[in-house]
Image 1: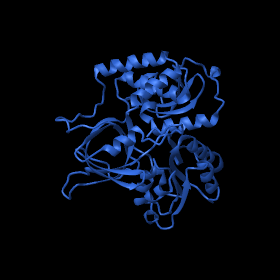
Image 2: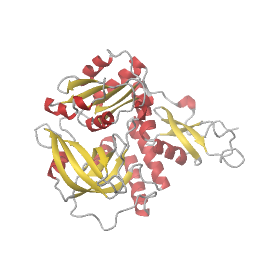
Image 3: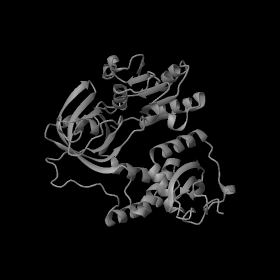
Image 4: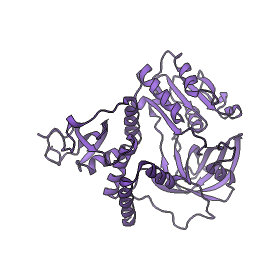
Amino acid sequence: MKTAFQTDTPASARTPLADQDHKLDILEHINDEHPEEVLAIAQAYGAADARSARLEDIFQEGCLLAVTCAETANGSSANGAADSAAARPLFVPFALKGDLEENVLYLAYEALARQGKPLSGQHKQFFSVLGSEMLTPHMLRLHLQSTMPLPEDAPGHAWFFSLKTLERLPAKLPAARQRMSLIGQWFSRLLLWWLKRASPARREQVMLSFTKDQRYYTLRRARKSSADAPFADLAEVDVFLHRSADGAPTPGSRWASALRAGDVIFSQAQYHEHTEHLAQGQCVLIGDETALPTVAALLEDWRNPQPPVVFCITADALDQPYLADASLPAGARLHRISASGDVAAAVIAELERLSAIDAVWGALENSDAKAIRQHLRHARGLAGSRNRVKGYWRRSGNATG
C-alpha cells in the first residue's frame, strides 16, 4: 500500500526553518484563510483526486501537505491506495526564491491557473451610493444599495472595492465564474512564468501594482430596504479615513470622501471573516480603527453567554466613541488604548492580568498583531483557530488606506 505520494525531495533532504514562530504564523494563516488554495495545490501537484488538504509543515525546500483523497466505488482511492480516509503526506517543492508566504501562495496561484480556476473570493459586485455620514473625526459611513443579496449575519465581511466610480449600473450584471476565460488562463500562465523568473523586489512591485487602486472595506451591518424586500439590499460600510505622513488623505480616503448619492461603485472580490470560535468561553476582541467595524458588529449580536474583554485602539482619542460603552454586552470589560505608544506592550500587559483566555479575535497593525499572537501562543497555549489575531496593514512612512 502506498503511504505517501511521490515527491521530488526526500525527507532526509528537507531543511527545517530557523524561525519556527514565523512558520507557525504562516501555517495557521494559510490553513485558516486559504483552504481552497491548499486543496488546489494538492490536486495540481500529485493528488488529482484529493477531496481535502491541509498544510502540515514548511521547509526551506518546499511544503508538506496532508491529503485525503476521494473514494471510488470499491473503497479505495482513485490512485489505487486503500484506506483513503486517512490523510497521506504530499511534499511539494517551492518554485520561487522568496519568503515563506510568497512561496506557498505562488504554488496556489500556479495550481489554480493550471485548473483554469479564478482565485477564491473573486466576484464582482455593484453598489449604488445612497449617501454618507461622519461618525467620528476619521470614521466615515457609506450607505449603499446592492442588486444582490447581502450577508445579514457576517461580522467582518468585507469587499475589495475598486477606487473608481461609475455613472450607472451596467445593463447586464456579470455572473460569478467558476472557471477563467481562455484569455484569462493564458494571461495567468504568462504572469506566473514571469514571476518565477523575476527578482523578489520586482515581483513585489508588480504584484502591488495590481491592487494599488483597490481597498478592502468592512460591512458594518446589512438590512432590507422594506419589509417585503426579498433579501437584505442595504449596506452600511464603515471606512477609516487614513492620512499619510505629510497629513494628506490617502487614495482610499479621498475616494470614499468624494462619493455622493447616485454614484455607482463596485468590488472585485469579497472576504469572509472567521469568528465562529467566539461562541463560548472567555473571549478577547482586539481592534484598531481598521477592525472596529468588525468588533462593533460582533458586540451588537454577542451570543456567547460569557461577556468578552475588548481592546479599542485608536490614534485619535476622538475616534474612541465609535465603540460606545453602551454597545457592550453586560459585564464586558473595555480597554481603550492609544496607538501613540507601544500598542503590543499595552495590550499584552492587560492580557497577562486575565485569569483565563479561551479564544481571541483581533486585527491591527502587522507587527503589533504578530507580537500579540505569539504571546498568546506561548503564554496561553492558544494556536490555530482559537488565536485569530492578524495584521490588516503594515506600519511605514505612509499610510496605505
